[in-house]
Length: 67
Image (tube, rainbow, N blue to C red; front, side, top):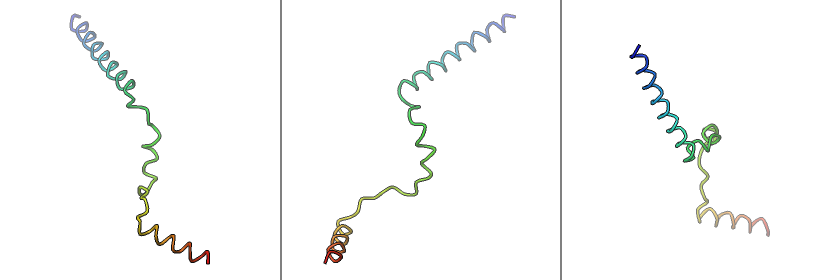
């Protein structure tokens, strides 16, 4: 019987440890973003800013269309 009391005591101590770890993780914001990971795979590539060369070409094309 004393082994059962020992096992129950150890399991309660471990459960309290996991509960404290969970509360700490929640307070630090580890679980704040639950939407982005599920949508991240839908985006192919990151958006890149156009280079100076591309901007010049676009401006030239706009000027040609205005004339």
